[in-house]
Length: 232
Length: 232
DNA sequence: GTTCGCGTCGCTGTATACAAGCTGTATACA
DNA sequence: TGTATACAGCTTGTATACAGCGACGCGAAC
Image 1 (cartoon, each protein chain N blue to C red):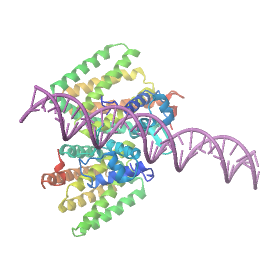
Image 2 (cartoon, rainbow over the protein chains, first blue to last red):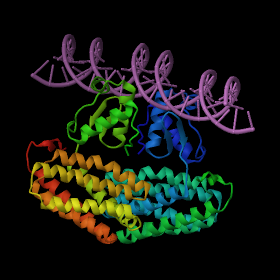
Image 3 (tube, protein in one colour):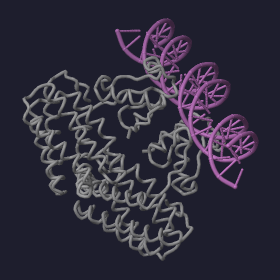
Image 4 (tube, protein in one colour):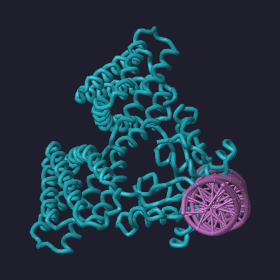
């Protein structure tokens, strides 16, 4: 979605707010008045306004006419909806990526390299640094899938869902155990994709999504007064 | 998507342009400079700008930074992408609608009424008026499905695709023969949905989409210099 | 005749002033 | 004490002025 040609102030403000929401620095429900953002960003109201409208279109901000904007809230239902929807889209996307890889040696090399990194990660001892490395790698994997998705609509829609997923990860504390499993799941995805087996790849990503959702739900249920007490 | 509470000028301009693009009154590629729209709509640049940005987010307008906006072009690939994507989403949506109808007598009544109208339509002789009546009814059917779709993301995404589909219909002249088949397909969808058979409903809508795509492609290939000579 | 450079014009990007609506509080009255 | 109403302060919605980039055309040089 966000191309490299971000230059206008509206783009800058948009990107900055998107990042802050994604990282959980701006908690769900935080009011975002245009004037306060003018102060914080140094831009004038026009680009701030445009950035807010864009975020609203992406579902990261709730906009109430003549009343103001707030960082969008996260409900159990919204989490379920998000993962159900991803479970519909992402198997189709990885299918397309599998076919694309079968016909493109460069793409195969890219996925092979990532597979190697996942395997190396699997052998490292759990640590903060390793977790961060995993997330960074998993992100690159996701973007590679998105990039290899032929269908324009599918590609854009999945890309638009990513900030929501990332936010959930940053709002809920993912337990280290889940990472072990997730690494394995990514290895399965790589293997299936590189083997040209679209069905297996789709199956693997579906499992991965199911597992992720379960973990998130477990962690939401846990910690009372945690980051996600903002649930409705 | 477009709620009834459209009141701001930005909403008005947005809705008006969306309609004109949908109806094909604004042909693909038509330049839309902000100033010309200020003249045409009577609003000032700010709401016009906002409307253009929204249309760009919906894919109805192509926006080139520091250069201007044009009504988005339609390519064979974009048509294929649109229908492939719909074929992924809409079977899932009608599945949800089928389940919703099974649990909601009011919804069942609504679909039963539409089924009756489709059946009546099937018995009428072909005419312009009948075609218009069919499209109007098919639209209502689509919206009923969208309304009965539980998943928020799925619902919004499908709704956002509708203007694209409608535009295709209005840019290419659909032959009357296709309508005969399409009425039957809608009857199948109604039947499956009312019978609570989600698989059959999904199958029926998939067939409907395949048939629609084929017709559009046939008609695009035909008429040289027709509405869709704007293809890239 | 062709190509390169420069200037003008029009457009978008931005800032800001003004208008209008909503919320919440304080006060007056029953 | 409870309720209703008016007002104050904030918010967003809109208009418009200004700045700066880009496209296009004209002219000059090769």
